[in-house]
Image (cartoon, rainbow, N blue to C red; front, side):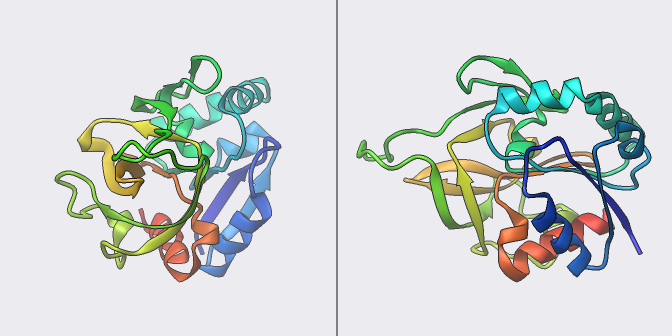
Length: 211
């Protein structure tokens, strides 16, 4: 049985994420202790809310060093929603705030209009289809059994802009292409909530256990 450790820093759908991983066969630990997190076989960084507050809380509790150790030792790390955004260099939400800098790129607000210039609502809350990022062809093992057009559940007002080489899958909102899944080595991020995305969300989480 694969062990998954979920960071509890007061921000995120911890129980839902934990139950989903248990459903796909993982042994789950939810921890507030960085010393436990650093021992993880696979580490999960959930998150909802504001980027700056999340980063400040993560750092104040001592989790950033645990995360860096996990990544240095090439153990898998998954960031979900805000947790994905925190993997990047920085975010422009409210003020420019440094992230974990594990994947090159910047987090910016979603466009407030569609590609025709018509206003649309923020946050983006909807089921949305995944499409192939430029050149990716869904090649990462994290996409095993998941085809283009599969829908996942999104709720976000900000999106990560990064190079094609780190984008595994995209989605669209108002015609704008957005990063949906990113990966650099054993570091993976999903902008959608896999724990709320039905059987294909569970498949994505199961794939993470095999990385």
